[in-house]
Structure formats: C-alpha cells, structure tokens
Image (cartoon, rainbow, N blue to C red; front, side, top):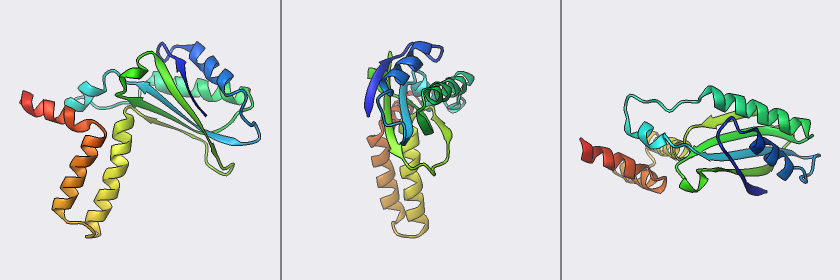
Length: 166
C-alpha cells in the first residue's frame, strides 16, 4: 500500500494521524514494514561540504517514536520503520508512505537515513567493494560502475558542481 500525506515538519502530529487513518484498513493479523520518505532540504549542502555530516536529529527520533506508538495503539503490527530523507522536490510538503507486509519473526527497529539516495548508493557500493575484493571485477570496471551508481542516484551532479567551484 502506497500513499502520500501532507507534512509540515517533524512537529506535525496531523501527519501521524493521517498515516494511521490510511493504514486503518490493512489486515491487523499481519506484520508490516513502513517506509517513509521526506524531502531533506539540506542534503545538497551536506553532500557538498566536507565539514558537514549527515546527521539524525532528535526530532527524527521523536517522530519515529510517536509514529510507532500511534500505529501500535491502532493495533497495526509494525516491525521496521524506515525514515528516509530524499532529494525529491515533490516531497516538499508531503510524506511518501509505503506499507509492506513482512514476516512476524522479523526484528522490530527504526532505520533512519538522512538521504535515501545515499542509503541506496551505499548498498550498491558495498556490493561493488565485495566484487573488487574477491577479484570478480578489476579496478577500471569498479570505477566505471561506481560512477554509474553516482549518476543513477543523482549524486554525481552534486560532486561535479563542487569540482567546478574548486
């Protein structure tokens, strides 16, 4: 189940209620992972700056705790909640939410990444690192595929802008 809800920041309790209402019709006998994407306005500056670290802020933690409590109070069995920042400009005033069925034995936890693109890029890069380490690809192929990953997730544009500045 995929949907969007209006969002006015991590203090917005109405968005939590809207998520709960939209999920009210799902099968309460099943377990779900919830994926929430939001627009992280400062991600571009963070990627460009060597001194600025991508960080998880206290309001992210509070929001996840409130969301988990809200859903559990509505008898929705949530295993994992992913809170992923995104460069997607269409999410400036909304959250993109997906509820995905999962197994009951899965561990309950909250997963937060300030940038979905970096989260996905990191997973792809780890695979490439393993292939290189196991000598399944050579250094040239590794660098070419790494550049493709950067292009795919829109990270190369930011890195190229920085090289023009310097």
